[in-house]
Figure (tube, rainbow, N blue to C red):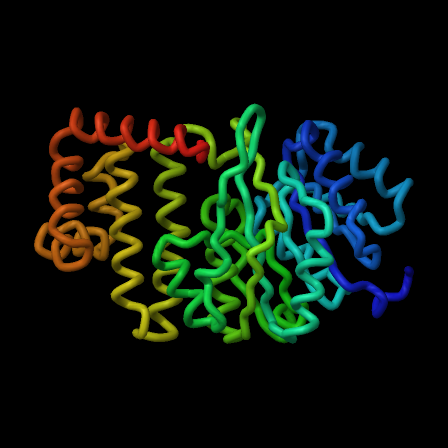
Length: 330
């Protein structure tokens, strides 16, 4: 299988500090019943021995390609490198610490070919050492259009790229934002731009096609610093402003989600004044009258109390985290 037109799926994996999990990830991909794949691994200057692991896999399986970057640029740029190199009919994004159940590609590919949809979404589950599997994505809620998918994301749906087959044509004759060093919500930005720039058709399956591993050392599992919080909101507002630049049809949902993010981070201990002064839209959204109109009285009161009563915010955050732990989500 050396001819590019024989490749059904190009799998793109950014690789950074995942040596502990990378063999499991690659084995789950290479062991899929769909054999006509290429696995493009982008070594983003990882300091561990992931690069050596990749080179060994390349020797033993010609479907694996390793691209070794000389400068660390983050997952957003790594994925860009991957999809610009891809030759398959479809593109599938995977993270190096996650893995796939059996027949995941067969499930997605069959549906994609039957429906001829541009985007085929499967369900995902959270798992980890000693943890039961918990549903991470409800694919049935995504709908069948780019509009319904975007509204789902803005209504707190999973904005991740993994567990999805994208037609490679969605990445042709278009430029998507790829910012070096962007490590928070970078997948949200790419997915949002795909939906709004390409207006793709969408289909979904209720089958689980992706297993998200809770890695306590990942950037999404460590206590955020003030700088990482600001970077997070820089990324979130990048998606927010991009949506507003294209259409006003989603403004209410856009405002609602951004305000909920602000509320959640303030509850989690982020400096309320820092976030309020982040930009003029933060100041607008965090006015009590606007909060009440956008997210309702109960959540508006909760957010205001978190802003002014740190002990209340700490107590509420502990309760939230306890509930998430009981649900197996953290």
